[in-house]
Length: 120
Image (cartoon, rainbow, N blue to C red; front, top):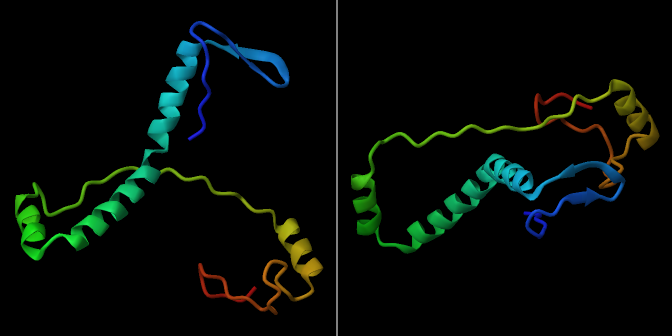
């Protein structure tokens, strides 16, 4: 996480001038909101750490925890994601420029789309 140390009651100025200023109290609220939005990333790491611990525990310990759980259904949480609407002209130009080879790995086309199994 990126954070900035600022003094009490000091405004934050941005490198492109003073297009806008923000007071520390508002900065703290914005930072808290961003941390809450990004909490799901931490949940994955918590899960993997818990699995590592559970694998080290004995069978009886795991079974006891399973018996004490409040529900057989897992908790739910909302996931927000950002996707890009791709431009067909950009894709076409890249395919033409690549001349049948992947510009990253150098492998020869055609490639199979993971989403639907069609050839690119």
